[in-house]
Image 1: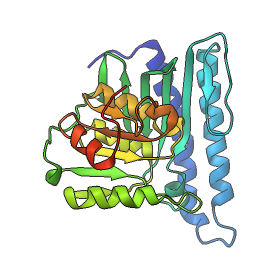
Image 2: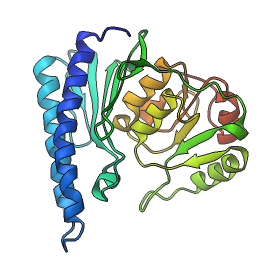
Image 3: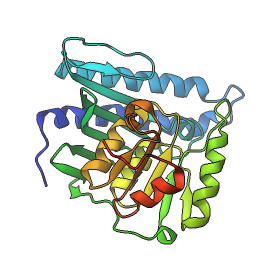
Length: 265
């Protein structure tokens, strides 16, 4: 196993600390489901608390780095390094007591992802990577799957929800569904990408995401030997948020089906 760099040590420790706090709160969600008010405010507070943990841990270790997050971005014009964080990816799952959510931390140098951590506390699965050093799940090296036939592949996606309806998605779904073994919608983009890196999924696509949804996961896919493409040539799939990821053997076929640009970052 590759040794974790100083930056990765900071990232994994921060993710674990935030994950443990969320795990304690997750234990309360089931009890809150039966209340009239419901758990929404409780989960919002849990999310905010986890983000503050990440901010405190990352800023303490690397005060010169910027931070990009959903609630607020801390700009550091004098540095080229930025933490891209999602303290609770899969909020709706968490809200409903579904045990599929994660803490996500990416590290960008300019517009290039150089490290990523996706931590799933319930299974204690720490996906991590660094540019040029490979991708890992805990202590095991990750590789994308070796499948080359669409009819044997399992593909993940995200379904647009209220306020985000998309005719494009239905067109894409109709193009992909008849060609593959199955499609999954699990509700946490960072874990979808981590699962592509681990070979659990063979590919993944989704539109209208934010950088904090996909930054760490995109880094994992690339370091596990997979490919990342935008939907339009010249756009950055992480910062634009329209992303297609897969192993190398299926990438061209999926790009053609989805109308994505057959180019990589």
